[in-house]
Structures are given as C-alpha cells and as structure tokens.
Amino acid sequence: MAEAALRSGRDASAVRLMAVTKTVDERRVGEAIAAGVDMIGENYVQEAQRKIEAIGERIAWHMIGHLQTNKAKYAVKLFDMVHSVDSIALARELDRRSRDAGRIMGILIEVNSGGEATKSGASPEKVLPLIREAALLKNIAIRGLMTMPPWFDDPEKARPYFATLRELRDRIVGERIEDVRMEELSMGMSSDYRVAIEEGATIVRVGRGIFGERPCC
Image (spheres, rainbow, N blue to C red):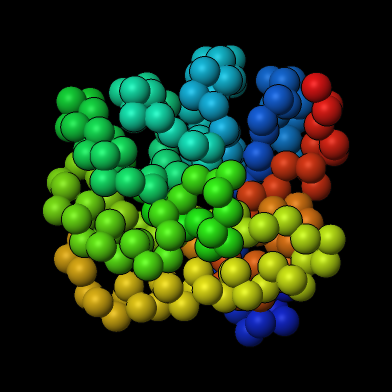
C-alpha cells in the first residue's frame, strides 16, 4: 500500500486498510485486530451484529454490503459509516433512524461505475442529483464515494473505473455543495488495490489478501 501511494506521489498515511470479514469467524477477526487492523468492513447486518457483540466497538465498523431500508434502524446502531448508499430512499431512512438514535451517520455514495446489472450502486450520471438531494438531510453526512468495478484477471483493466470515480469526486468538489465533504474514495480490493491507490483510493477493502480464500459454499 505504501509503495503504491509513493508511486503516485501520495503520502502513505493518506490510505487506510479495511479488513473485509464476511464469513470470517470472530477468533480470526480478533487476530487481525491484534495484528493492527483498526477498520472492519461487513456485508451483512446480522453477521456484523454477532461479531460486534463478541469483539466490541474498540475499532471502526463499516457497512459495505447492500443495505435494505428495513435494516437501516440496525445499521445506525452498529456502524460508524455506511459505504453503500445508492438511493434517496435509503438516505432518507438512514437520516430518520439516525435522528431517532441521536447521531449523525457518515455515508458514502455507492457508484456502479461499470453499469453492471448484478451490482448495486447509482449510475455515475445520477450521483450528483442524489448527493444534492441527500445533502439536505441533517442526520447523515456525505463523506465520499465507493465503487466496485467489474472483475478482471488483469488489475490494470480496472484502472479506468477507479479514475472515473476520482474524476466524479473532483466534479462534486467543484460544485461546493453545503455540508458535503468528499474525503473518502473507497475502492480497490485484494486483486487491484495497488491500482486503486494509484488512482486516489483513501480506503482499500481487503478480505482475501488478509484471510485467504473463503469457502465456496
């Protein structure tokens, strides 16, 4: 990670490692934390709840999977940030539930940079209107963008999708929307995090690279 940051003229401290712990048991998550991991990404609310109850809240827990609106009431109690907001309906529900919980929830807008029908995320052309509308909500705080590009054997082929997210971030910054801070670009996983860092990632989401291959079933 540090080498990739330096190659692109960035400070290594500008990029943070998120350990993605889907299907990883609490014992192994605890070992990763003991080794220095301080940010965990979970895909499912129920799985995260079980781990947080076992491990505690001494580290940052982030929701990175698709979040249904009916799970928002649990998400605002469990997570420090939600990376996967892709609709105004979800933004409004998180805002309402955060208000009830007496907190402000940090969110990232998920962008479907590859236009894949099987993936969640707002299309790039819909992101700015979504942000403008969501920025009016008082109990969520928009802090950046997230994407998961198509999978390629060659990580270089993912570079244009990462560059697109960075360029979209720059356009949004130029709009100077009140209360919107484009601090985070959550992009890059085990196979392509180096390229993502070179293109501006501030959070890379690594699961297999830390915990190894997951069971197929």
